[in-house]
Structure formats: structure tokens, C-alpha cells
Image 1 (spheres, one colour):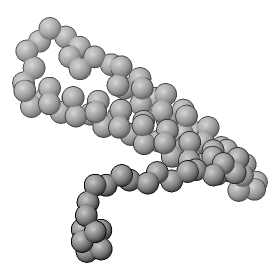
Image 2: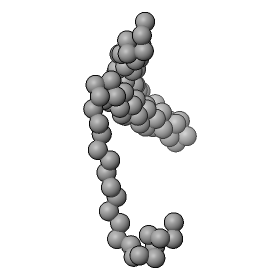
Image 3: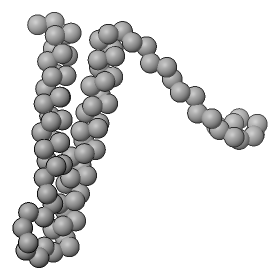
Image 4: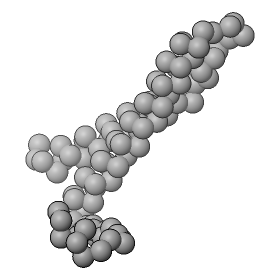
Length: 91
């Protein structure tokens, strides 16, 4: 198996991982009418947040790898800063 085929396999696995993370994110935080402590609720919300951010991180990396495989050149964004001459030169 060559490197391109291996990368394509990893990309497919990444898409499956994102689908699983989406399932986790869609689940209800509170699944019953029971009174849940604030600590448990906070942990459940943090877990959902982590799943969402992980999914976005995986998708961004997948996009980068697909672009590299296709030979797409990404344009670098130049930050617009409104600083004076001394501030720019102090770095």
C-alpha cells in the first residue's frame, strides 16, 4: 500500500470518527427527569463541547490532507494590523 492510499484510508476513518462524534453531540445531556447535580451537568456539557471541537478539528485536518493529496495550494492570509512603525519593528 502506498502513502496516498494509506492517507485516503485514514481520511475515510476520520469521516467515520466525525460521524460518531456527531452522534455523541446530538445525545441529550439530561436523559431523565431526575434532578442532576450541577457537577454532573457541567461534566456532561463539557463532554459535548469536547466532542464538537474534536469533530471540527478532525474535519479541518481532513481538508488539509485532501488539499495536499490534490495539490491545492492554500493562500496564506495576511493579518491586518494597525500598528505603527516602532511596534512592527520591535518584534
